[in-house]
Image (cartoon, rainbow, N blue to C red; front, top):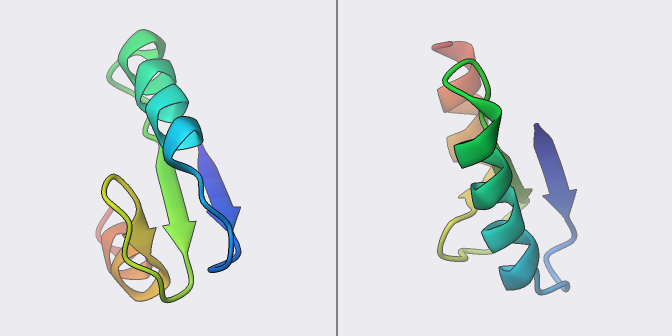
Length: 56
Protein backbone atom coordinates (compact mmCIF):
# COMPACT_ATOMS: atom_id res chain seq x y z
CA UNK A 1 0.00 0.00 0.00
CA UNK A 2 1.30 3.43 -0.91
CA UNK A 3 0.07 6.49 0.94
CA UNK A 4 1.28 9.95 -0.01
CA UNK A 5 1.18 13.13 2.04
CA UNK A 6 1.96 16.73 1.21
CA UNK A 7 5.09 17.99 2.94
CA UNK A 8 2.94 20.35 5.03
CA UNK A 9 0.94 17.50 6.66
CA UNK A 10 1.82 15.48 9.76
CA UNK A 11 0.98 11.80 9.61
CA UNK A 12 2.65 10.11 12.58
CA UNK A 13 -0.59 8.37 13.60
CA UNK A 14 -1.20 7.17 10.04
CA UNK A 15 2.34 5.75 9.91
CA UNK A 16 1.62 3.77 13.09
CA UNK A 17 -1.66 2.53 11.60
CA UNK A 18 0.12 1.58 8.36
CA UNK A 19 2.74 -0.38 10.30
CA UNK A 20 -0.04 -2.23 12.12
CA UNK A 21 -1.73 -3.01 8.79
CA UNK A 22 1.59 -4.30 7.41
CA UNK A 23 2.07 -6.61 10.40
CA UNK A 24 -1.42 -8.09 9.91
CA UNK A 25 -1.43 -8.25 6.10
CA UNK A 26 1.31 -10.85 5.72
CA UNK A 27 4.67 -11.17 4.02
CA UNK A 28 3.43 -10.39 0.50
CA UNK A 29 2.36 -6.86 1.41
CA UNK A 30 4.24 -3.63 2.18
CA UNK A 31 3.25 -0.21 3.49
CA UNK A 32 4.93 3.00 2.38
CA UNK A 33 4.17 6.52 3.61
CA UNK A 34 5.84 8.88 1.14
CA UNK A 35 6.56 12.60 1.35
CA UNK A 36 8.02 14.55 -1.52
CA UNK A 37 10.92 16.12 0.40
CA UNK A 38 10.15 15.97 4.10
CA UNK A 39 12.02 13.59 6.41
CA UNK A 40 9.74 11.82 8.90
CA UNK A 41 10.51 8.73 11.02
CA UNK A 42 8.76 5.74 9.46
CA UNK A 43 8.16 7.48 6.14
CA UNK A 44 10.13 7.76 2.90
CA UNK A 45 11.15 10.69 0.79
CA UNK A 46 9.94 10.32 -2.80
CA UNK A 47 13.42 9.78 -4.23
CA UNK A 48 14.19 7.01 -1.72
CA UNK A 49 10.83 5.34 -2.36
CA UNK A 50 11.37 5.33 -6.12
CA UNK A 51 14.75 3.63 -5.61
CA UNK A 52 13.12 0.95 -3.46
CA UNK A 53 10.31 0.30 -5.94
CA UNK A 54 12.59 -0.09 -8.93
CA UNK A 55 14.40 -2.90 -7.08
CA UNK A 56 11.22 -4.83 -6.24
